[in-house]
Length: 352
Ligand code: DP6
Image (cartoon, rainbow, N blue to C red; front, side):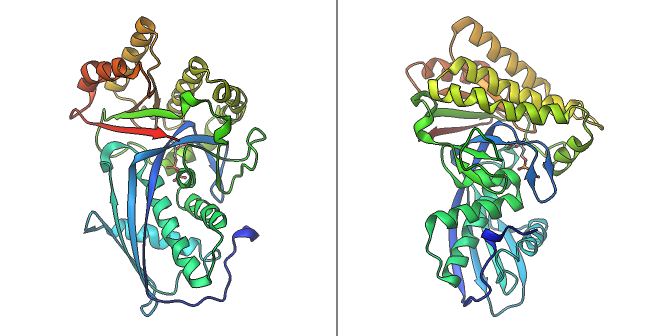
């Protein structure tokens, strides 16, 4: 059943167009892992939108040619991506009725290494959705900025669930929860900034590249494994419940409880994969060593360095930017960086 609000008008005037847009990646704190048909998340999630890690995309649209999609990544044609995007365009025709009426050349670049495990599907689909909404606005004369962004988030979600969160800055929620007003399973909303303590509004995310290479399990397969995971129901409930303390934590600036919750979420995601059939262990020995070092550092210094993980081995090192951050940065450079496969580290910082 298509969502009525986002159905596209069927009267439009096509023209040859070139549009370009930029979209950042994001890192989830309460994780989305498990979904239902129609790209509906099994639980609400919340993420930080990154600043430096983003995708730049340009779309050249030619309505005189028949429907075809060509994707160039860093100037090189990627046939597999092209097929994926073609399939994606077909899946959103009801929302953009003009979309199959022309040929597309899509040029895209990421500002971060593909192998970093930083979600390029989030920034990638986010950037494509923004470009598509630029085209849509020009063909339909649409001018409502807020609606354009919401529909871009809605369309990005259909491409990749976590992508819908990248359309907004700061802390962003996707998935309906009574704890966040206006939240929806269909698009993301920004978590109200006035309800976020200053300590969370200038934060570092340094990604330690423990293992560069292909992911052992794709998100599609990973989400699917939750369908038969005996712990899934409890996990979905827990993620939902975690919004209650998180709301209080964000408001009060309770860093200690924030750390506990965020690390627990990351470890739960990995525990779910370990308890799937077939089982996956996505951490590498370096991941475990880094986690232990972080815990030891925190115990010895009391400084707020902590971690989260995506569905891979790399470690997102999180810490607030303030008068203590130099000591944390020195520790990362000297004690944790040696665990990165090629000394790789991607430094990002969220300020909002
Ligand atoms: C572990 O959004 O990549 O990063 O919807 O199948 O494209 P699809 O999955 P995807 O899953 C992301 C999972 C995660 C957690 C998160 O970002 O919330």
